Length: 346
Figure 1 (cartoon, one colour):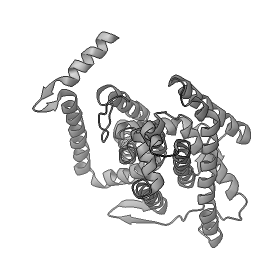
Figure 2 (cartoon, helix red, strand yellow):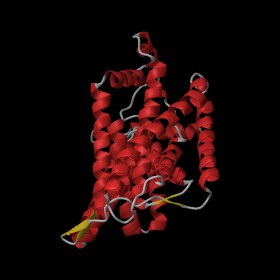
Figure 3 (cartoon, rainbow, N blue to C red):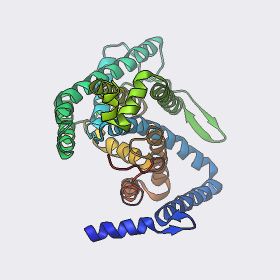
């Protein structure tokens, strides 16, 4: 195994025209994929644009979940595998609270609008509180333990949340109320539904608000300082526990929003949804550059588009092979991802 690692290291050090051999092949594969997709766009442009619309909607939801993964990793270098189940639990809580309103499915009434405006932020706040409690009980006591301990704890917390949802609503799929408008329009043969626009716009607004918060607020600067050097940040007077708790809170806000958006878009949820969607979102975070917030958003969009193109042009049975092949390839050949930078070990 050591010889294999050293051979890979030597391969990474080989340069071709001022670019490392690994990066050269990475760009070559990306160029080949773009050319193949361009050919499909020329052959059948209407179908290609339609697939792109659906892929962007899926990618926007993956991006919201991927941001939670990348924020937590950037701060404490923990892969929080329970994050996907926090996303699913948000869907379950949203469906339950919406059941208390006299909503009309298949139509968009004033009651539906009020319910959406009240439940959407309420679910985000509830999931934020739950995730802070998870960090306080499960992760904070293991903060200085070997890295394997919190990783195993995260996996255990994932199964714990899945068990709660299983006992709560059972193993069958759960219907999520369909309260969004059914309106749509067709432009040049391409179908644009209100749901597609709602998903993309909502995700874009949330990501933009997160970027403003991280870059402009005092707490956001404290989070960036903690991610860069936790010990130095503590010496400068930053409350590390408060900053890490805030990171889990904000990550869960986005996961709760993602769970609500998923339910409103697909109208079907199940207790193991977080396992599959969480792994895909984790792949998006790694692909964009784990620990890099713009990278997570970009990775989510690209993974959603990749899944859509794979379903259409390769076959849905190969989609997960393609997605997790990307994960393996990135981890082996380009562990920094698209926007990540190589940094020295802390």
